[in-house]
Each structure stands twice: as structure tokens, then as C-alpha cells.
Length: 256
Image (cartoon, rainbow, N blue to C red; front, side, top):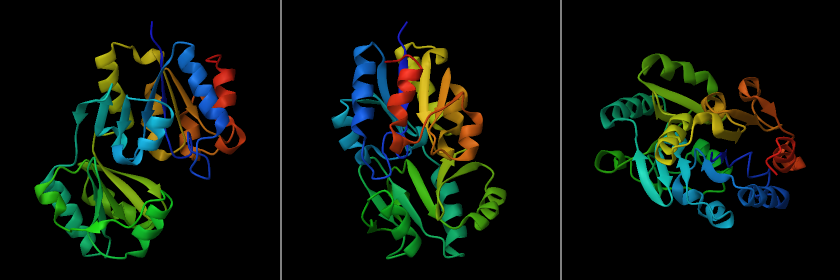
């Protein structure tokens, strides 16, 4: 029976320098040679992972935390927060000077110019400041929206908008997802297509948006640099990504 490995990107495939360590690349290619399917599960957009999928020759991936799923180069599932809900959140945030960034499969679009929280958050992704169109979501498909506010403001949104989920990925930013949206749901969509049981899935991650994924699969692996809440749900803890953690854990699990 086929087994499949899902890798998060930032903090899992990518090290602190936003590069894939050579040891990780060699280990993943060896895993494929050993018969494992290789896939990505990321909060990033499809256009933001092109270098990774080319470098590792991957054509199956879960992006936008499960809102845009691709199997063998074909889009098989999309989702997003309904426009009326998004509008309410945007207006609520605007009243508090909390801007947003919309993302579709090709680009990012910001609601305001030169916001320091947007600038600093996207800098960690090595992404330039987006073009400005505060009404982009009204006439276009938006698969993920980022809202920019500090952690102490987050409970305001959680209480006011229980029909969506806010998942923090940066001290200044949260992803806004459908209530049942997650990497785990995206993985389930792929497994249905591939006819692979969840018990045959390994997942590797480090962030808060990896928690459902690590809980759902057969073997959930948290990197040594992972958030403590993510480590708490993992079956296995790897070493830090900067210390060849991915290659070492693939050996420990006898995948390679």
C-alpha cells in the first residue's frame, strides 16, 4: 500500500535562511526512490512555492492551509471565507486600524499602503509589499486573507467572528480560514483522490497551522524548532531544521 509524506515549508523544509538544506533535499529524493509519495502542505499560496516544487519535482500539494489542493498538477479542491463574512471582518478591522492582505492563486493584494505590520510580516516570507486594492475580494476569488494585528487583539476577533478561524503565523498576523479549514482537510481531499488511508500518512511541520495535520495523520512529526503547542500533539519530535533535523528523522523512522 502506498505511503505518502507531507512537508510544511517554512521552518520544516526551509531552514532559518529560507533555503532547503542539502541534507533534506537528498533525504526526500531518497524517500521517493524508496517508494514514498512526496507532497507539500503549506499556508503559502501556489505562486509562492514554485521554487520548492521545481527543486523537489513535486506536483501534488495542499496550499493556503487546505483551501487550494492540487493533485498531479490539477486543482481538485478550493475553498475560502464567504464574501459577506470577510466583509464584516474587514470593516471590524478597519475600525481598529488592522489592515488585510488578500491572496489568490497568483498574487497578494493589500488593503492599505505601507503598513508597518504588513511590511514586517511579509518580509519574513521574503515577499515584497503587495499592490493596493481594498475591494479586491468583492469581484475576485480569495483563497486566504491575512489580517494584521497583535496577539492581544486576537480574542476580540475570535469572540466576534466564531464562524471563522484565526490562525496566527506571525506576531503581527493571522490567517483567516473557514471554520473547518485546515491542512488536515486538504490532505483528506487528496487521500480520497489517491485512495490512501490516513494511517499511511506521515506529516512534518512546526507551526500552529500544522496542529490539525499532525493530529490527523498516521505519524505526526514536529520539528525541534516547532511551536510548543505543535510539539505537544506530535507523535515524534525531530531535531531543529537548521541541524539536519529532517534528514535525521527520516532515517530514524526508517523511511530512508
